[in-house]
Length: 125
Image 1 (cartoon, rainbow, N blue to C red):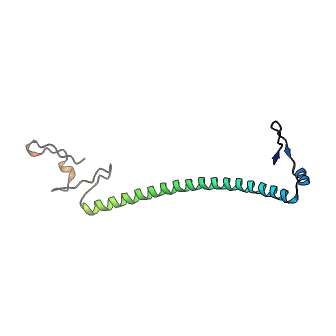
Image 2: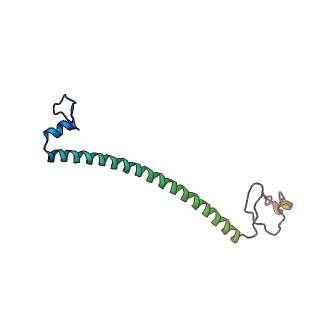
Image 3: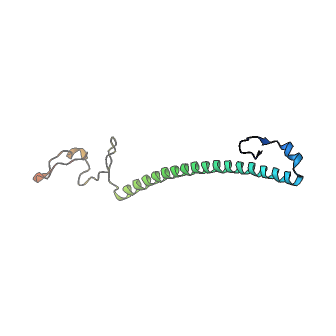
């Protein structure tokens, strides 16, 4: 739209009026400029929407990657512990451990037992 040149006037010229007074070449340039503005506006909107979707996809990918990495790390740690300490046990109720039984495999029988020479008590908790 072409606005009136007077500073205090907000009127716009109608396209049929412009077509009557402008040469065909100038009117074609005017229409091409209008089309370019519309295309630029659409491109900008689509670009903004694309950037928002891309940011969302990146965030979702990073979250999924972190979850997968955490699960992989946990599995790798469990495998390492099983290989490194094949006799280690873990409490089935509270998951405390791993506890590596030394000398005796009955952890309940010695729990709370006082060590010789006042060196403390055995805790298999």
